[in-house]
Image (cartoon, rainbow, N blue to C red; front, side, top):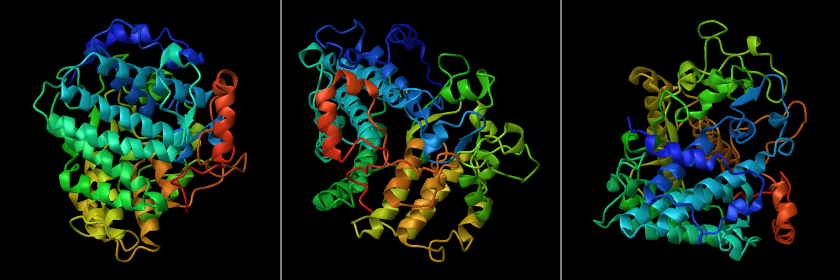
Length: 471
Protein backbone atom coordinates (compact mmCIF):
# COMPACT_ATOMS: atom_id res chain seq x y z
CA UNK A 1 0.00 0.00 0.00
CA UNK A 2 1.33 3.39 -1.01
CA UNK A 3 1.94 5.68 1.94
CA UNK A 4 0.97 9.30 2.55
CA UNK A 5 3.66 10.16 5.10
CA UNK A 6 4.92 12.98 2.90
CA UNK A 7 1.53 14.63 3.35
CA UNK A 8 1.48 15.20 7.09
CA UNK A 9 3.22 18.58 7.18
CA UNK A 10 1.41 19.67 4.03
CA UNK A 11 -1.99 18.88 5.49
CA UNK A 12 -1.23 20.72 8.71
CA UNK A 13 -0.32 23.82 6.75
CA UNK A 14 -3.33 23.56 4.45
CA UNK A 15 -5.74 23.14 7.35
CA UNK A 16 -5.01 26.67 8.52
CA UNK A 17 -6.64 28.23 5.46
CA UNK A 18 -10.17 29.60 5.65
CA UNK A 19 -12.83 28.46 3.22
CA UNK A 20 -14.60 31.72 2.56
CA UNK A 21 -11.88 34.25 1.87
CA UNK A 22 -11.72 34.67 -1.89
CA UNK A 23 -8.11 35.73 -1.80
CA UNK A 24 -7.18 32.23 -0.66
CA UNK A 25 -8.40 30.96 -4.02
CA UNK A 26 -5.91 33.25 -5.69
CA UNK A 27 -2.83 32.93 -3.53
CA UNK A 28 0.02 34.82 -5.07
CA UNK A 29 2.09 32.37 -7.16
CA UNK A 30 5.01 34.75 -6.80
CA UNK A 31 5.01 34.00 -3.05
CA UNK A 32 4.37 30.26 -2.89
CA UNK A 33 4.50 28.18 0.24
CA UNK A 34 8.01 26.72 0.38
CA UNK A 35 7.14 23.11 -0.37
CA UNK A 36 8.68 20.72 -2.87
CA UNK A 37 6.94 19.82 -6.10
CA UNK A 38 6.62 16.27 -4.77
CA UNK A 39 4.84 17.37 -1.57
CA UNK A 40 2.53 19.68 -3.51
CA UNK A 41 1.73 16.97 -6.05
CA UNK A 42 0.84 14.43 -3.37
CA UNK A 43 -1.14 16.94 -1.37
CA UNK A 44 -3.19 18.02 -4.38
CA UNK A 45 -3.96 14.40 -5.28
CA UNK A 46 -5.20 13.63 -1.80
CA UNK A 47 -7.23 16.85 -1.63
CA UNK A 48 -8.89 15.99 -4.94
CA UNK A 49 -9.72 12.43 -3.95
CA UNK A 50 -10.93 13.49 -0.52
CA UNK A 51 -13.24 16.13 -1.93
CA UNK A 52 -14.78 13.78 -4.49
CA UNK A 53 -15.05 10.86 -2.03
CA UNK A 54 -16.39 12.75 0.98
CA UNK A 55 -19.99 12.45 2.12
CA UNK A 56 -19.79 15.33 4.60
CA UNK A 57 -22.84 17.48 3.89
CA UNK A 58 -20.73 20.62 4.34
CA UNK A 59 -18.57 19.76 1.36
CA UNK A 60 -20.06 17.06 -0.89
CA UNK A 61 -23.73 16.23 -1.46
CA UNK A 62 -23.36 14.46 -4.78
CA UNK A 63 -24.53 11.07 -3.47
CA UNK A 64 -27.71 12.87 -2.49
CA UNK A 65 -28.04 14.65 -5.84
CA UNK A 66 -27.70 11.29 -7.59
CA UNK A 67 -30.30 9.85 -5.17
CA UNK A 68 -28.14 6.95 -4.03
CA UNK A 69 -28.50 7.99 -0.38
CA UNK A 70 -30.97 10.07 1.56
CA UNK A 71 -30.86 11.69 5.00
CA UNK A 72 -32.36 10.33 8.18
CA UNK A 73 -33.15 13.41 10.27
CA UNK A 74 -31.74 16.66 8.87
CA UNK A 75 -33.05 16.63 5.31
CA UNK A 76 -32.12 20.07 3.97
CA UNK A 77 -29.40 18.82 1.62
CA UNK A 78 -31.55 16.02 0.19
CA UNK A 79 -34.04 18.76 -0.63
CA UNK A 80 -31.36 20.75 -2.43
CA UNK A 81 -30.62 23.47 0.12
CA UNK A 82 -27.07 24.44 -0.84
CA UNK A 83 -26.90 27.77 0.99
CA UNK A 84 -27.31 27.05 4.71
CA UNK A 85 -24.04 25.13 5.00
CA UNK A 86 -22.11 27.01 2.26
CA UNK A 87 -21.79 23.74 0.34
CA UNK A 88 -21.08 25.38 -2.99
CA UNK A 89 -18.46 27.68 -1.48
CA UNK A 90 -16.64 24.81 0.20
CA UNK A 91 -16.54 22.75 -3.00
CA UNK A 92 -15.41 25.78 -5.01
CA UNK A 93 -12.63 26.74 -2.63
CA UNK A 94 -11.39 23.20 -2.08
CA UNK A 95 -10.85 22.56 -5.78
CA UNK A 96 -9.38 25.98 -6.56
CA UNK A 97 -7.25 26.43 -3.44
CA UNK A 98 -6.16 22.97 -2.35
CA UNK A 99 -6.00 21.27 -5.73
CA UNK A 100 -5.50 23.67 -8.63
CA UNK A 101 -3.29 26.19 -6.86
CA UNK A 102 -1.02 23.47 -5.48
CA UNK A 103 -0.81 21.82 -8.90
CA UNK A 104 0.12 25.15 -10.49
CA UNK A 105 2.77 25.69 -7.84
CA UNK A 106 4.11 22.16 -8.36
CA UNK A 107 4.28 22.66 -12.13
CA UNK A 108 6.36 25.81 -11.67
CA UNK A 109 8.97 23.75 -9.82
CA UNK A 110 9.50 20.89 -12.29
CA UNK A 111 11.33 20.65 -15.60
CA UNK A 112 10.51 17.08 -16.59
CA UNK A 113 7.90 16.75 -19.33
CA UNK A 114 6.47 13.62 -17.76
CA UNK A 115 5.98 15.38 -14.42
CA UNK A 116 4.34 18.30 -16.19
CA UNK A 117 2.10 15.88 -18.05
CA UNK A 118 1.01 14.15 -14.85
CA UNK A 119 0.18 17.51 -13.29
CA UNK A 120 -1.69 18.61 -16.41
CA UNK A 121 -3.90 15.51 -16.38
CA UNK A 122 -5.01 16.29 -12.83
CA UNK A 123 -5.54 19.95 -13.67
CA UNK A 124 -7.75 19.06 -16.63
CA UNK A 125 -9.69 16.59 -14.50
CA UNK A 126 -10.28 19.20 -11.80
CA UNK A 127 -11.28 21.96 -14.19
CA UNK A 128 -13.82 19.62 -15.76
CA UNK A 129 -15.31 18.91 -12.34
CA UNK A 130 -15.71 22.63 -11.74
CA UNK A 131 -17.30 23.33 -15.12
CA UNK A 132 -19.63 20.35 -14.77
CA UNK A 133 -20.65 21.62 -11.32
CA UNK A 134 -21.20 25.32 -11.99
CA UNK A 135 -21.05 26.02 -15.76
CA UNK A 136 -19.11 29.20 -16.55
CA UNK A 137 -16.30 29.69 -14.02
CA UNK A 138 -13.16 31.78 -13.46
CA UNK A 139 -10.55 30.07 -15.63
CA UNK A 140 -8.14 32.05 -17.80
CA UNK A 141 -7.77 34.79 -15.17
CA UNK A 142 -7.97 32.48 -12.12
CA UNK A 143 -5.11 31.58 -9.76
CA UNK A 144 -3.16 34.76 -10.48
CA UNK A 145 -2.99 36.01 -6.93
CA UNK A 146 -2.73 39.72 -6.26
CA UNK A 147 -2.30 40.36 -9.99
CA UNK A 148 -6.01 39.69 -10.44
CA UNK A 149 -7.96 38.96 -7.25
CA UNK A 150 -11.34 39.26 -9.02
CA UNK A 151 -11.09 37.11 -12.17
CA UNK A 152 -13.72 37.16 -14.87
CA UNK A 153 -15.66 34.05 -15.80
CA UNK A 154 -14.96 32.07 -18.97
CA UNK A 155 -17.61 30.48 -21.15
CA UNK A 156 -17.95 26.79 -20.25
CA UNK A 157 -17.83 25.57 -23.85
CA UNK A 158 -14.68 27.59 -24.49
CA UNK A 159 -13.11 26.03 -21.39
CA UNK A 160 -13.94 22.55 -22.67
CA UNK A 161 -12.27 23.30 -25.99
CA UNK A 162 -9.16 24.41 -24.13
CA UNK A 163 -9.23 21.36 -21.84
CA UNK A 164 -9.22 19.09 -24.88
CA UNK A 165 -6.17 20.95 -26.18
CA UNK A 166 -4.49 20.67 -22.78
CA UNK A 167 -5.13 16.95 -22.43
CA UNK A 168 -3.60 16.45 -25.87
CA UNK A 169 -0.52 18.34 -24.69
CA UNK A 170 -0.36 16.18 -21.56
CA UNK A 171 -0.55 12.98 -23.61
CA UNK A 172 2.38 14.19 -25.70
CA UNK A 173 4.38 15.02 -22.58
CA UNK A 174 3.69 11.60 -21.09
CA UNK A 175 5.16 9.97 -24.17
CA UNK A 176 8.56 11.30 -23.16
CA UNK A 177 11.22 9.34 -21.30
CA UNK A 178 11.76 12.12 -18.80
CA UNK A 179 11.73 11.51 -15.07
CA UNK A 180 8.26 11.02 -13.57
CA UNK A 181 6.99 11.49 -10.04
CA UNK A 182 7.57 8.19 -8.24
CA UNK A 183 6.77 7.85 -4.53
CA UNK A 184 4.92 11.18 -4.65
CA UNK A 185 2.52 9.64 -7.16
CA UNK A 186 -0.02 7.91 -4.92
CA UNK A 187 -2.19 6.95 -7.90
CA UNK A 188 0.15 4.95 -10.16
CA UNK A 189 3.49 5.01 -8.38
CA UNK A 190 5.21 6.72 -11.31
CA UNK A 191 3.92 4.38 -14.04
CA UNK A 192 3.82 6.73 -17.03
CA UNK A 193 2.12 4.11 -19.21
CA UNK A 194 -0.86 4.05 -16.85
CA UNK A 195 -0.90 7.84 -16.69
CA UNK A 196 -1.08 7.88 -20.49
CA UNK A 197 -4.08 5.54 -20.37
CA UNK A 198 -5.68 7.76 -17.74
CA UNK A 199 -5.08 10.79 -19.96
CA UNK A 200 -6.61 9.10 -23.00
CA UNK A 201 -9.57 7.92 -20.93
CA UNK A 202 -10.09 11.46 -19.65
CA UNK A 203 -9.88 12.75 -23.22
CA UNK A 204 -12.60 10.26 -24.20
CA UNK A 205 -14.72 11.46 -21.29
CA UNK A 206 -14.34 15.11 -22.28
CA UNK A 207 -15.16 14.31 -25.89
CA UNK A 208 -18.25 12.25 -25.09
CA UNK A 209 -19.56 14.81 -22.60
CA UNK A 210 -20.03 17.32 -25.43
CA UNK A 211 -21.34 14.86 -28.04
CA UNK A 212 -24.79 16.49 -28.05
CA UNK A 213 -23.44 20.02 -28.52
CA UNK A 214 -23.96 20.88 -32.18
CA UNK A 215 -20.99 23.24 -32.38
CA UNK A 216 -18.68 20.57 -30.94
CA UNK A 217 -20.10 17.43 -32.57
CA UNK A 218 -17.30 17.02 -35.09
CA UNK A 219 -14.62 17.64 -32.48
CA UNK A 220 -16.30 15.20 -30.12
CA UNK A 221 -16.07 12.47 -32.75
CA UNK A 222 -12.47 13.16 -33.77
CA UNK A 223 -11.14 13.55 -30.22
CA UNK A 224 -12.94 10.44 -28.99
CA UNK A 225 -11.64 8.36 -31.88
CA UNK A 226 -8.10 9.59 -31.27
CA UNK A 227 -8.33 8.65 -27.59
CA UNK A 228 -9.69 5.19 -28.36
CA UNK A 229 -6.98 4.52 -30.93
CA UNK A 230 -4.23 5.73 -28.59
CA UNK A 231 -5.40 3.45 -25.78
CA UNK A 232 -7.90 3.92 -22.95
CA UNK A 233 -8.43 1.76 -19.84
CA UNK A 234 -8.82 -1.95 -20.64
CA UNK A 235 -8.57 -3.37 -17.11
CA UNK A 236 -9.66 -2.47 -13.59
CA UNK A 237 -5.98 -2.63 -12.68
CA UNK A 238 -5.54 0.61 -14.63
CA UNK A 239 -8.24 2.56 -12.76
CA UNK A 240 -7.24 5.94 -11.33
CA UNK A 241 -7.52 5.09 -7.63
CA UNK A 242 -5.95 5.90 -4.30
CA UNK A 243 -5.24 3.40 -1.51
CA UNK A 244 -6.45 4.87 1.76
CA UNK A 245 -5.02 3.79 5.12
CA UNK A 246 -6.33 2.71 8.53
CA UNK A 247 -5.41 5.82 10.48
CA UNK A 248 -6.38 9.47 10.15
CA UNK A 249 -5.68 11.72 8.33
CA UNK A 250 -5.30 9.15 5.56
CA UNK A 251 -8.53 7.18 5.86
CA UNK A 252 -11.21 7.29 3.21
CA UNK A 253 -13.27 10.36 4.16
CA UNK A 254 -16.49 8.33 3.90
CA UNK A 255 -15.34 6.48 7.01
CA UNK A 256 -15.06 9.75 8.92
CA UNK A 257 -18.75 10.46 8.47
CA UNK A 258 -20.16 6.95 8.57
CA UNK A 259 -18.04 5.56 11.42
CA UNK A 260 -15.77 7.97 13.28
CA UNK A 261 -18.51 10.60 13.62
CA UNK A 262 -20.70 8.14 15.53
CA UNK A 263 -23.66 9.56 13.62
CA UNK A 264 -26.34 7.81 11.59
CA UNK A 265 -27.14 10.50 9.04
CA UNK A 266 -27.75 8.43 5.93
CA UNK A 267 -29.65 5.44 4.61
CA UNK A 268 -29.82 4.28 1.02
CA UNK A 269 -32.51 5.99 -1.03
CA UNK A 270 -35.59 4.28 -2.39
CA UNK A 271 -34.62 5.58 -5.85
CA UNK A 272 -31.64 3.28 -6.26
CA UNK A 273 -33.01 0.44 -4.14
CA UNK A 274 -36.20 0.16 -6.18
CA UNK A 275 -34.33 0.00 -9.50
CA UNK A 276 -31.91 -2.61 -8.18
CA UNK A 277 -34.65 -4.70 -6.59
CA UNK A 278 -36.59 -4.75 -9.86
CA UNK A 279 -33.50 -6.04 -11.66
CA UNK A 280 -32.36 -8.45 -8.91
CA UNK A 281 -29.01 -6.67 -9.09
CA UNK A 282 -26.35 -8.72 -7.24
CA UNK A 283 -24.47 -5.55 -6.26
CA UNK A 284 -27.13 -4.96 -3.61
CA UNK A 285 -25.19 -7.27 -1.27
CA UNK A 286 -22.17 -4.97 -1.64
CA UNK A 287 -23.76 -1.53 -1.99
CA UNK A 288 -26.18 -2.12 0.90
CA UNK A 289 -26.34 -3.75 4.32
CA UNK A 290 -28.85 -6.51 5.12
CA UNK A 291 -29.87 -5.00 8.45
CA UNK A 292 -33.57 -5.62 7.67
CA UNK A 293 -32.98 -9.32 7.00
CA UNK A 294 -31.17 -11.40 4.40
CA UNK A 295 -32.04 -10.24 0.90
CA UNK A 296 -34.41 -7.52 2.12
CA UNK A 297 -33.64 -4.00 0.90
CA UNK A 298 -35.91 -1.03 1.56
CA UNK A 299 -34.77 2.49 0.76
CA UNK A 300 -35.77 5.63 2.58
CA UNK A 301 -38.09 7.95 0.65
CA UNK A 302 -35.78 10.40 -1.05
CA UNK A 303 -35.95 13.81 0.61
CA UNK A 304 -38.17 12.68 3.50
CA UNK A 305 -37.14 11.97 7.08
CA UNK A 306 -36.10 8.31 7.06
CA UNK A 307 -35.44 6.91 10.56
CA UNK A 308 -32.19 4.98 10.58
CA UNK A 309 -33.52 1.71 12.09
CA UNK A 310 -36.36 1.45 9.57
CA UNK A 311 -34.45 1.39 6.31
CA UNK A 312 -31.55 -0.33 4.58
CA UNK A 313 -28.11 0.89 5.63
CA UNK A 314 -25.02 1.55 3.57
CA UNK A 315 -22.89 -1.53 2.85
CA UNK A 316 -19.99 -2.68 4.99
CA UNK A 317 -17.39 -2.03 2.29
CA UNK A 318 -18.02 1.70 2.57
CA UNK A 319 -17.42 1.57 6.32
CA UNK A 320 -13.84 0.39 5.76
CA UNK A 321 -11.31 3.21 6.34
CA UNK A 322 -9.07 1.68 3.64
CA UNK A 323 -11.78 1.49 0.95
CA UNK A 324 -10.21 2.78 -2.26
CA UNK A 325 -11.03 6.14 -3.76
CA UNK A 326 -11.72 6.47 -7.49
CA UNK A 327 -11.33 9.31 -9.97
CA UNK A 328 -12.00 7.31 -13.12
CA UNK A 329 -12.36 3.63 -13.95
CA UNK A 330 -12.85 0.99 -16.62
CA UNK A 331 -16.60 0.89 -16.01
CA UNK A 332 -16.97 4.54 -16.98
CA UNK A 333 -14.79 4.09 -20.06
CA UNK A 334 -16.75 1.06 -21.30
CA UNK A 335 -20.06 2.90 -21.02
CA UNK A 336 -18.56 5.80 -22.96
CA UNK A 337 -17.43 3.34 -25.62
CA UNK A 338 -20.95 1.91 -25.82
CA UNK A 339 -22.27 5.42 -26.41
CA UNK A 340 -19.56 6.09 -28.99
CA UNK A 341 -20.66 3.02 -30.95
CA UNK A 342 -24.30 4.16 -30.84
CA UNK A 343 -23.15 7.46 -32.32
CA UNK A 344 -21.27 5.63 -35.08
CA UNK A 345 -17.87 6.75 -33.87
CA UNK A 346 -15.00 4.62 -35.09
CA UNK A 347 -14.34 2.19 -32.23
CA UNK A 348 -13.87 -1.56 -31.96
CA UNK A 349 -16.68 -3.88 -30.88
CA UNK A 350 -20.38 -3.16 -30.60
CA UNK A 351 -22.46 -1.07 -28.24
CA UNK A 352 -23.77 -4.28 -26.68
CA UNK A 353 -20.23 -5.58 -26.13
CA UNK A 354 -19.12 -2.44 -24.32
CA UNK A 355 -22.37 -2.20 -22.33
CA UNK A 356 -21.82 -5.75 -21.08
CA UNK A 357 -18.14 -5.05 -20.44
CA UNK A 358 -19.04 -1.95 -18.39
CA UNK A 359 -21.51 -3.83 -16.20
CA UNK A 360 -19.04 -6.70 -15.78
CA UNK A 361 -16.21 -4.33 -14.84
CA UNK A 362 -18.39 -2.69 -12.19
CA UNK A 363 -19.47 -5.99 -10.70
CA UNK A 364 -15.98 -7.46 -10.72
CA UNK A 365 -14.65 -4.36 -8.99
CA UNK A 366 -17.19 -4.82 -6.19
CA UNK A 367 -16.54 -8.56 -5.85
CA UNK A 368 -19.60 -10.05 -7.59
CA UNK A 369 -19.07 -13.62 -8.82
CA UNK A 370 -18.80 -14.54 -12.50
CA UNK A 371 -21.93 -16.68 -12.25
CA UNK A 372 -23.97 -13.79 -10.84
CA UNK A 373 -22.65 -11.45 -13.54
CA UNK A 374 -23.67 -13.86 -16.28
CA UNK A 375 -27.13 -14.31 -14.79
CA UNK A 376 -27.63 -10.56 -14.54
CA UNK A 377 -26.58 -9.91 -18.14
CA UNK A 378 -29.08 -12.56 -19.31
CA UNK A 379 -31.94 -10.86 -17.48
CA UNK A 380 -34.29 -9.67 -20.27
CA UNK A 381 -34.68 -6.34 -18.45
CA UNK A 382 -30.89 -5.90 -18.55
CA UNK A 383 -29.78 -7.56 -21.80
CA UNK A 384 -29.04 -4.88 -24.37
CA UNK A 385 -31.18 -6.47 -27.07
CA UNK A 386 -34.30 -6.77 -24.90
CA UNK A 387 -34.12 -4.06 -22.22
CA UNK A 388 -36.75 -1.40 -22.74
CA UNK A 389 -35.99 2.10 -23.89
CA UNK A 390 -33.64 3.92 -26.23
CA UNK A 391 -29.90 3.43 -26.12
CA UNK A 392 -29.69 6.53 -23.94
CA UNK A 393 -32.12 4.99 -21.43
CA UNK A 394 -30.42 1.59 -21.42
CA UNK A 395 -26.93 2.97 -21.02
CA UNK A 396 -28.07 5.74 -18.68
CA UNK A 397 -29.73 3.38 -16.20
CA UNK A 398 -26.86 0.91 -16.01
CA UNK A 399 -24.22 3.66 -16.01
CA UNK A 400 -26.03 5.36 -13.12
CA UNK A 401 -26.31 2.11 -11.15
CA UNK A 402 -22.58 1.48 -11.62
CA UNK A 403 -21.61 4.94 -10.32
CA UNK A 404 -23.21 4.23 -6.92
CA UNK A 405 -20.20 5.35 -4.88
CA UNK A 406 -19.22 8.08 -7.32
CA UNK A 407 -22.02 10.50 -6.70
CA UNK A 408 -20.72 13.28 -8.93
CA UNK A 409 -20.58 10.96 -11.93
CA UNK A 410 -23.97 9.48 -11.13
CA UNK A 411 -25.43 12.99 -11.12
CA UNK A 412 -23.62 13.78 -14.38
CA UNK A 413 -24.94 10.61 -16.03
CA UNK A 414 -28.48 11.59 -15.11
CA UNK A 415 -28.02 15.10 -16.50
CA UNK A 416 -26.52 13.93 -19.76
CA UNK A 417 -28.62 10.86 -20.59
CA UNK A 418 -31.84 12.04 -18.91
CA UNK A 419 -32.02 8.55 -17.49
CA UNK A 420 -33.02 6.94 -15.29
CA UNK A 421 -36.10 8.73 -13.98
CA UNK A 422 -35.28 10.15 -10.53
CA UNK A 423 -37.69 11.28 -7.84
CA UNK A 424 -38.62 14.80 -6.84
CA UNK A 425 -37.41 15.57 -3.33
CA UNK A 426 -40.23 14.63 -0.95
CA UNK A 427 -40.16 17.69 1.29
CA UNK A 428 -39.29 20.52 -1.11
CA UNK A 429 -40.96 19.01 -4.17
CA UNK A 430 -37.95 20.08 -6.23
CA UNK A 431 -36.50 18.10 -9.16
CA UNK A 432 -32.83 17.13 -9.33
CA UNK A 433 -30.73 20.29 -9.83
CA UNK A 434 -28.89 20.81 -13.09
CA UNK A 435 -25.98 22.61 -11.44
CA UNK A 436 -24.67 24.13 -8.24
CA UNK A 437 -25.41 27.79 -7.72
CA UNK A 438 -22.34 30.00 -7.38
CA UNK A 439 -20.86 30.52 -3.90
CA UNK A 440 -22.09 33.45 -1.84
CA UNK A 441 -18.45 34.58 -1.63
CA UNK A 442 -18.49 35.19 -5.38
CA UNK A 443 -21.43 37.54 -5.02
CA UNK A 444 -19.71 39.52 -2.28
CA UNK A 445 -16.06 39.45 -3.33
CA UNK A 446 -16.29 39.18 -7.13
CA UNK A 447 -19.68 40.78 -7.61
CA UNK A 448 -19.38 42.39 -11.05
CA UNK A 449 -18.00 39.24 -12.65
CA UNK A 450 -20.54 37.10 -10.80
CA UNK A 451 -23.39 39.21 -12.17
CA UNK A 452 -22.02 39.00 -15.71
CA UNK A 453 -21.65 35.21 -15.46
CA UNK A 454 -25.12 34.78 -13.98
CA UNK A 455 -26.63 36.77 -16.84
CA UNK A 456 -24.59 34.87 -19.43
CA UNK A 457 -25.79 31.42 -18.35
CA UNK A 458 -29.44 32.43 -17.99
CA UNK A 459 -29.53 32.93 -14.24
CA UNK A 460 -27.68 31.56 -11.24
CA UNK A 461 -30.31 28.93 -10.57
CA UNK A 462 -30.40 25.22 -9.76
CA UNK A 463 -32.55 24.74 -12.85
CA UNK A 464 -30.15 26.38 -15.31
CA UNK A 465 -28.72 23.74 -17.61
CA UNK A 466 -25.05 23.39 -18.51
CA UNK A 467 -24.10 23.91 -22.14
CA UNK A 468 -23.69 20.15 -22.78
CA UNK A 469 -27.03 19.26 -21.19
CA UNK A 470 -29.13 19.93 -24.28
CA UNK A 471 -31.80 17.20 -24.16
